[in-house]
Length: 274
Image 1 (cartoon, one colour):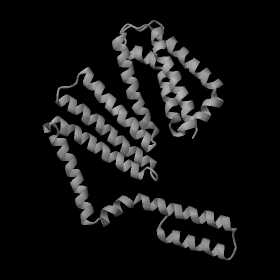
Image 2 (cartoon, rainbow, N blue to C red):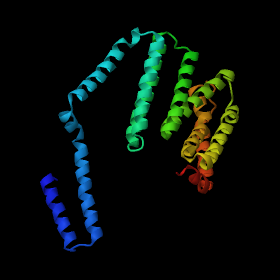
Image 3 (cartoon, rainbow, N blue to C red):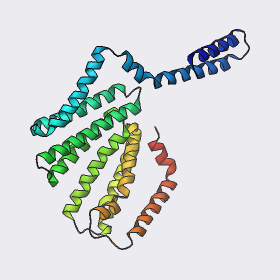
Image 4 (cartoon, one colour):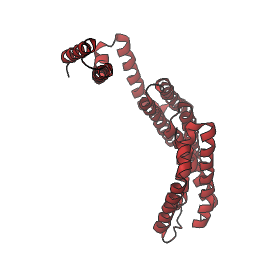
């Protein structure tokens, strides 16, 4: 709807309000409806208007940021490794800082910025390991551990559950690799004994967080569900001793999880709800 027609309709609504042709709440509803449409229209053209009306300082700042990104991309391999790590941490910190600034008003935008920072950390970290010829088991494990810790802390302080969950996933991977190194020939039953108590601990932490730090309770619950299926995932991805009937065992685990969640639904739904 064009601006002139919208202005006519708003004046008509004001006329109805003044002469009491419609109840007050109806007029308020219609007025808010057309104002909301105007706001959405302005949002759609915001970027073009900002570019058109941008000052010289804004243009220079944008040009400088784009040039810096290209400069880092072209010469990253020539930097010494401490500078490479510093650049990765600096870019990640900038993304997280901007995410924290806009988090109260724009959660989706904050999540997008935090995701960009997380991908940059992982990507530049992996690139640096490759350039320095450090792509060993210890180097990759160190990178995963650092990423997991930073993602977990960022997810906690920015109140972004998905980022917090990704940090836990990194710790789960390290946990699984460590067990695979210690017991490479572990049986299916040993896998259950190794993983399921951790799943129970995560669900217990969900219950505890519900009473103490409620916003991270859903993360603990999601991690607990993930760990529940980790024995089968571990054996399929890392172990060579896959037992016969693995599909049936996976199906039994899914049925067991469904039954437990169904009968305890009145409890865990309260835990994960904010």
